[in-house]
Length: 240
Image (cartoon, rainbow, N blue to C red):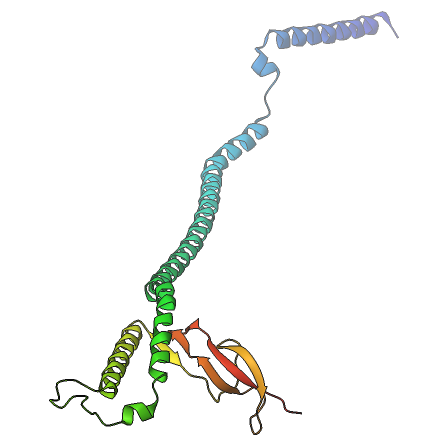
């Protein structure tokens, strides 16, 4: 290689070095935006998401509101059902209370004279005994005056008048008791019932079924469907 070619090669290398240095200095002097360009594809995705979000947010809010309202509605429906059930129970209790109060009031009215009527039955028994103490033969005797002028009654006439007076009194008393649903019953010939009868004695009687009432010492009385006084009776006994 000669000297001329060596000089020309040196000059070309020096020119290339200087051009590189100038390019580097020019790049340094450029603004940051030009030196480092942005990547716009990421910004496009963010814009697309920002466009979609306004439509999705109202839908999400509406779903939450609908779910909340549904839960509130179910709670109110459950509360209404509970209140309705309680109201029905209270109504039934009130109706039962009214029926019981009316029944107790009726019983109090019907059975208010129970104690008084029980005491009054002793008077009825005495009147019945008085009527039975007079034999029918004495009542069948003809009336005869004990004096010739006929102004004085005989003993038989007085006895008849007394008997009639007692009989009328006894009948009126029984009618008064009947107004208050008090009725008598005579169980003679019936089967003995411990709920209605009180056995005073037992006696073997031929031809009578054991357990049959053969005699009534005191008749029984009922006030409506309740026993006011049990009948006092004698009962046939087994003869074997």
